[in-house]
Length: 215
Image (cartoon, rainbow, N blue to C red):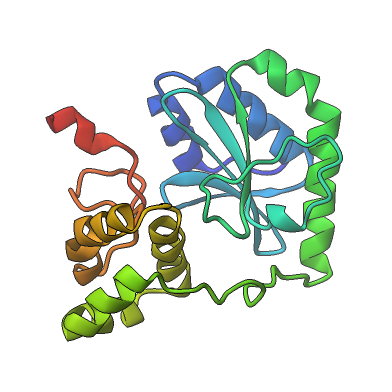
């Protein structure tokens, strides 16, 4: 088994709800020959310096996330997008040690495939389906507000895509216009649609719901 990382020990000792499940995942990942690291405030597992998976806790479950899960075959149909706009990562959620035990052999096969994908140098095609139509309501807002246009152009492609998908998802023009108006200040602040704006999140730049504690 690979060497344990003391930062992961500290993380797990502070875990409140899913300690047993995360310990189980940790043991499984190390048994697959992965190297234990600590990145983005979570236990991260690598192969030859390449990120393979990360584990973490949420309020209702713990997670095993594959960085390039979109490339995995997923014959069992257990991989899910962490968010509707996610393009590369795929996640598996667990609420018991029994679930992990039941999927042990499956998880090992997925991990082996993920490691081989990295060895082969395969990458997710982020150019595919990159272009999205800008809703008319947002086009008008950008035309009326040069600062907003500049701020939106400065966002990463993923953050731009997130907004466009959200704005376009409304069927009625009134709703689309309302969504644009509600998110204008967030865009001007350089934030993505799911980024933390309160400063309380422990999963920055993403929002982890910590803002709810001040309501």
